[in-house]
Amino acid sequence: MKNILILCPTLRDLREIPRLGYNHNYIYEGADTREILSSFDPLVFIEYVIKKIKHEKIDAVIGTHDYPASIMASIIANMIGSDGVNVAANFLCQHKYYSREMQSRLFGPMVPEYKLLDPFQKEDPPYGFPFFLKPVKSFFSILACRIENTNQFLKYMEASRAHIQEFVEPFNRMLKKYTLLPVGAGYVMAEKICTGQQVNLEGYVYKGQVFFIGITDSIMYKDTQSFKRFDYPSSIDSAVQQRMMDVSRVWLSHLNYGNGLFNIEFFYNRRNKSLSIIEINPRMCSQFADLVEKVDGINTYRLQLDLSLGKKPDYSFNRKGKFKFGSSFVLRKFSDMKVLSVPSPQQIKQVMNKFEEARIEIYAYPGKNLSATLQDARSYRYGVINLGGNSREELKSKFDFWRRALKFKFQKI
Image (cartoon, rainbow, N blue to C red):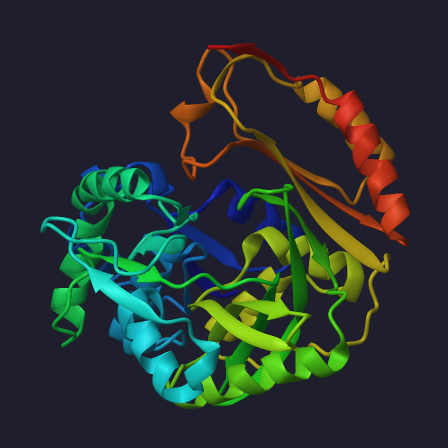
């Protein structure tokens, strides 16, 4: 029996890991910190965990979401000598400025023109409108948005100051202690607009060798930057997928990545056949874990566990799952609303009995506004439904059934 330390476990971690059937001892430390980062000190937490496990044999350390769990998992794994993503590689991927600097050297035209801006100084718009702005360090697409005019630019710079003070300081404390990188994350990045089909390539590195899991299409709500669903496997042409894999190999070969999962987001422009790199994440895509299982027959949490234990995962593109396709449907509103009621456990169980492969996550709480939970400022996510099917039409039919069966009630505010 192996002792697996799981940092800041999410509800998804708690749901998926026990399903794997491993006879491991899971040790959970910390809460899901994504909504309380302003009061969370990662350095204190790391010191606490190291002291607590000092006399225990820990065989693996896992943190599945990027901030701060995956960074802390890299640090603690390095401190106790277990397998994981290299600490320096993790920071280089998560610090968007340094990531872009390295990408531009390696890939040139695949990287949009970018500029570092200080929101605490008077800055002029760096490009003609529209352009894109995002924090040097964020997660969940918070404050990543298209800027159309000067008024939006000024409001964004004001909002980013609060974001930096609340969310970025924990990252900067870790950056200062565990790296020699001189530029902190208290900035925003302006980038010229990229267009095309957005996709997410996921893979892993084992002892320096890169392996690929698959590519997922990211589908947006019409005329928005908000995700509507994620479709696996991708519909992108296989030759283009190979180009994405080639980019991934080059990037990872320069990082001394260590053992771990990764995912890289791209835009593919069908008109001019160009690829653009959006960002590179040194972690698994937990939202897609069961989609891969539905199609390929293996849950990517299993790959994460194996890699953290220093084992080579047993995975190939064999498509041995129960379904040909998997989709993760995102439920959203485009204005803030008060939540009157959400589906009861009995309702959910009834629908689960009909579609056993399904996963459902509800982020809304009766009596609270949708804005009371972590949101991306462009829309208000209140649920996710993951389904499998043997055609896209079957998936749509299943989702329509779920949407009718699960009763949400909202009130305008």
